[in-house]
Image 1: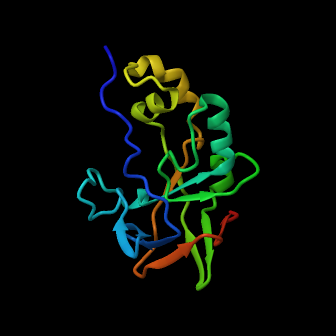
Image 2: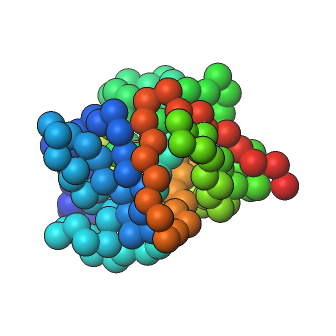
Length: 173
């Protein structure tokens, strides 16, 4: 059986500022706030979950994905925030939660959970759009354990804005 579904990067847009709300993320693009695909009110949101509204990726993970697949440019996995990191960030490294430090203060987020690589994303990464789930299974394994990234909920009720150069760190247990 050949693969069905594809990973579409056409809607990915780099932004310098995010507005984080408990319902999801907005990005400032061309002077307009646009809702992230995982925002509760986005027209294409299928299975909204409060714990999935903000996603993180790391430059060290992109380095590994480039080494493995050679097709990965920064941001291709669709994360809201990409953090500069010299080493791999494992689930136990972020078990105490994530802290964002902005111009207006800090925001403590809960423990993020691992974003599992879907079959469509793995097909994209391996340049095998017609591969079956079984055929890409070994490569999906390489993208697990946080390599694909992490997601976390946003505490409310107020929104907070974050931008380029804001500091992201793992909170300790």
